[in-house]
Image (tube, rainbow, N blue to C red; front, side):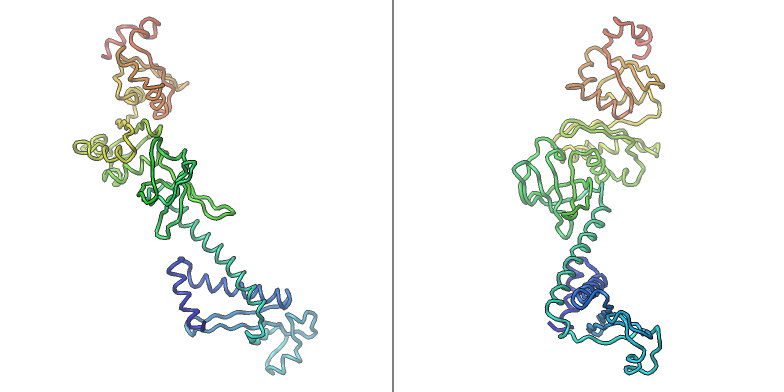
Length: 362
């Protein structure tokens, strides 16, 4: 390969790997320097000059002019230096070209190995920084393979980086095959000894949040804000929303005309239920809304303990609590309050509330 071909190859490397030509040249200079020192002595000083414009690669030994030589590999006597150029004085550096043929096959092989290691690290750094910036972003990838334990590998990005979607980050019941397109959240990016690992998720609550941001223009414009969101993947999500514009209904914006927006998201997550409720800075009101779709008769809250007692109609108790306590559990996480839900009859029998208290709120 000629020098011209070499520098042309650098252009291809920059395009294909995203590694800057300058980074490659710096790595090559370092690799040659390390290899030379290994072959000719650690004290040796060399300078590598790569001129991309002239397609030239030059290697020089670099020695300091001294009165008395102590380290021959890095020093040259004033007397010898003056035989090269009379103007040299103590402290000057003398550069002498190295014949690349003399450089040696072993030294060249060392340089190649050092260069490979260096570029591997550069490539890892580039990959890490590229995907670290995408944490909590929504991406569309292609399933490349599925392991027996259910782990899914997904190709993402232009360079087809392979991300990992483990079983506990998947929506229960979902099945994918190689070649399927899939939306994923970049949950975390790790830089380990085996390279960059991109951890993906469809089970995280941020996945739902990003889906709504992509589907609802008012959220992207920050007119509608998602104040709080909690999720039990595959079963139910609760989301509290607020509009900064009194003329725009936050819930309506998320639901869309005839439910088109929310239905698109529900379809993406396999039919998982989504409760969208209007956020309120009135704690009692917010707790009551959080138990949607159940109707609430009355709420009592203790600010000191962050505990709330809630009464619902007898026939709405199971709806308020939800299957295996899911609705009440999500409501508690959404509001940040411990919620004790009672039926009207149970509350009256226990003396939890006065009857006229509840009647006044119906």
